[in-house]
Every structure is written in structure tokens, then in C-alpha cells.
Length: 427
Image (tube, rainbow, N blue to C red; front, side, top):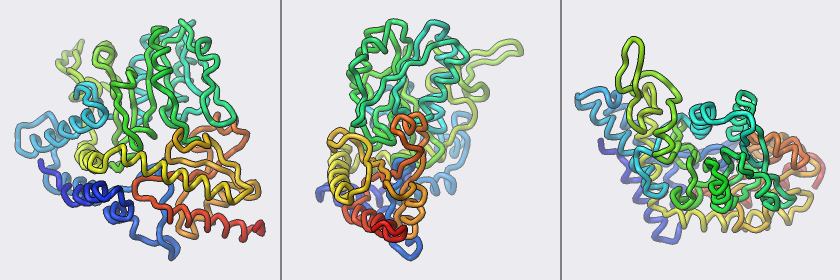
């Protein structure tokens, strides 16, 4: 199957060659040409999901128009094309995250399901009373709730690495928190609220010395910076396609082959079996042991050109662009006054996400007013209610940036914030 990706890639490569021009890149994204309430759309909700380039949209359309069939189950032409599309996407994922083995790349519905897979398949069989699960205070609910439920079921203890007032992890008692009783450490690489980039390599190294396994929630990091999972040395890494230009409904769990081989399946049914009898069953090889039922084949086919697009730009260039944006945004927002900005003040220590509150206007009211100016941001607890409690707020406004955002977008955000203040009589 040949995915129609040339048009998007050629523009992306031209942008990279020209020094990463987001205006050129923006032309590849159809939705960014629309207006909202009569204003040019300024999309600043990328931590929730990113927009899709033409090449991804075309690939999804092409798959369903010309290649739709089930995978691994047929020898006719369409089935072989569909299988090639899915397994080709798996190879691209393996290459993108550091050249891992394809059998270590498992397709899931999203990052949340990938984490649940580990908690269910590994956790239920390896945790008991007296064991410890270590998390951090800045985790997304997807990397909290599965472990809370597992601790309740198994009797394992939950411990949390705290954060300091600047939005960094407080590692002063790390040796005490990651004790010899720790069986698994699960932590975010980049906070979806604070933007903090955590020193996961250092923390993983300590956890391994204690004999614990490690899981990294990389939903916010892999789309925004170079990440080599072999260098991280994490036992599991989870992320989602839709946060990195790909379609919704498909995620990735990377796991070390020897650990995955020891785990029981997560979902039972078709395609994850080797042999079934009336009284027994044996399991397929990796990675298919964990991919029971018909997968999101179209999503995989469309994820491949998303990876090509980012690879064409270069993840180092993506990271440099976001540092430039975050530096500019922090400066402009701080000059507004009356804003409380959360997370590290050093742009090098954070990703392209800024959460803040206006001391005079509720986040939901701000989001509503900003929308009337065509500025799309997120307001709420961002699926991180324990972190909100730690910060002493119920909700924040979150602006998050990506490859197609510009300094002009940030200027539009600031002008819309000023307009909101005028509307509420706080100018």
C-alpha cells in the first residue's frame, strides 16, 4: 500500500530547510484556514490534541477508499495491503522512538489504554501487600487512576514524588520514596499542566537499582522533542498518535521484549491466539499477543505519514521552535500582570504548555471570551485534579503550542486576554 504523503512531506521538508517556517507549515493544515466567530482560528489547545496535515487526512481517506480489509487474516490483495499498511506503521513507530524492535511496539486505542494494559497485565500478577507503587504529584489521571485501582485491589502502597513551588519534582527524598519495596515507578516525562520536563533518566536509574520496573507517560514529550526510549531505559513507554499529528483512536505501548513475553494478554479474542481448544488456548507472538480483535488499521495507516511529517521537520527543530515560542509567551504573559503562571520559569526546562490563572476572571469565563476572538485554549483541571489541589486552585487556563503556531498567535492570545479584562471591567 502506498500512502499519499508526498504533498505534506514536501512542504514540511521545505520548512525545515528554510529554518523551520511555521507559516509554511501552517499551509499544510486545512483546519487552520477556517474562521471562528469571524476571526482567524488561533489553535492553542495542542496538549489536548493536535491538528492534522493534509497528508494524514489523505492517508486515512485513501485507506478506506482503496485498501480497507482486515489484517493478518486473509491472502487476498486488500488484506495484504491492509496488513502492510499496519505493519509498516509499526516499523515507523519503532524507528521514530529510537530504533527498537517492532515486536516491542504494541498498538492500543490511546496512551490511557497503554498504561491500563501494564497495570492490568503486569500489575495484577506481580503486586501484593507490602509492595510499593511510586508516582508523582503532577500525573495525568491516566497515570493515576489505574494505579490507585490496582493498589486497592492488591493491597500495594502508593507513594508520590512531590513537586516544589516552582513546578519541579522535589527529589530530595527520592532514596526514601523509591525504597527496596518499590515494584514499579510510573511518571510523566512532561507535565500536561506545568510543562515541566522531568529528569526521567536519573529517576529511572535509581528505580532500576532498587529492582523496580519503570513506566514513562510520554504523551506530551514524544510529540515535542527528540525521545529515544532506549536511552531512557524505561521498561514501558506510552503515548498517543493524536497528540503528534496523527488520528484519534490509536496509541502506542513500547515495552521491553523480555518483560512483555512474561506478561499475560490484556484482551482475549481473535488474532491474539496461537491455538484454541475447547478447554485451553495459547497466545500469539509479540506484539500481536496484546492486540486482540480488529485494530484501528486506518488509524495506523494515517499515523505513518504523521511520523514522516515530524521526521521531515526534525524533532530537534520542533524543540527549538517551541522553546522560542514559550520564551516569547512567558515574557508577554508576565508583562500583563495579574496573572499567576505555573511551572518552571526557564523555557529550557519546560515544553510548549503554559497554565495560568487571572486573579480576577474564572478560567471558564476566560476560555469563553477567548473563543469569541477565535483563540482556542483549554480551561479546567486538565485531568489532573490532585495537582490542582496541590497548586491551590480548582482550574487553570492552558495555552499549548505546536509546530504551526507563531508569535503572532501568542500576540492574539494576549490581545484576547486584554479584551476579556475590558469585558469584565478589570482593564
